[in-house]
Image 1: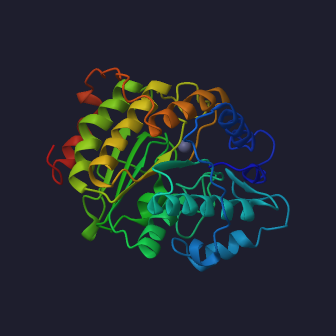
Image 2: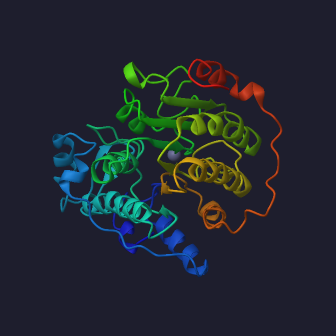
Image 3: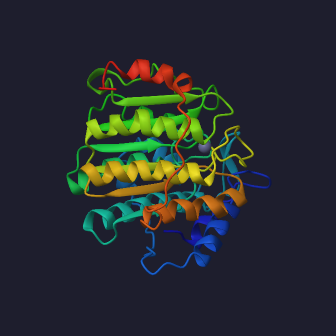
Length: 335
Ligand SMILES: [Zn+2]
């Protein structure tokens, strides 16, 4: 799902999270002709839906920017007159995709929305994010569809502090993140594992700058897949940023299209085993246009089951890079 209206959120000249990202994805999808690809049209989220994950004061603060021209929540997070409406459309797009997946109208799907969401906390916008699209999605699955156990895998190169915080004490939402570390926003150490009844339901896999497909795919096959299989999610969500791509200008990782394909396939296996195949990916970051042009079709090919006959390259085991996260998580999972 994508929509031209996602280009209305104007972040100003030179900002990496630009409307051009959606334009490039729209062009890419126009060229990506597959008979079984269903285009969904997003809707606006209601204030009540925004409030599933955000305090009323935050919803009102963002709403108050509507029609008021250029402003900013912080140095990274500018807004324009149309930002509130665009952000409501981003949340509504995710919720609409989830409804379609649960109804069985589609097998799985990808919501190409902006602004992104995973840095947004319950009471504040930050890091290009106004509302936490994926976190609201988790709450919506529970409230609207009676689904309890949701897996969120966040492969954006940045740690999703907002999503982690939303479910830090929640035993039924498993938040898993691979991210460059140390890096923005500073959270995401391996020892951050959740708290209270949510202890062990946050899985952080911090990776040093310079990691490539080997480390990422190893993390997914040797750590994330076994943990996710033991968790037995009813739905799988992906916070799918493309800024771990080797071309990305903001980060320093070396993931290629093949890496994104492999990560997608691991999560499809988890969804097939426990969630009836129900999986939804949601765009987060990703700031190189050529990377988007090739990585987006790579992930869609996997979601469409078109590449399952293709062997994925086997990663060189990366025990050292994952040792910290694995040691911490052994307290909670059979690894
Ligand atoms: Zn990011």
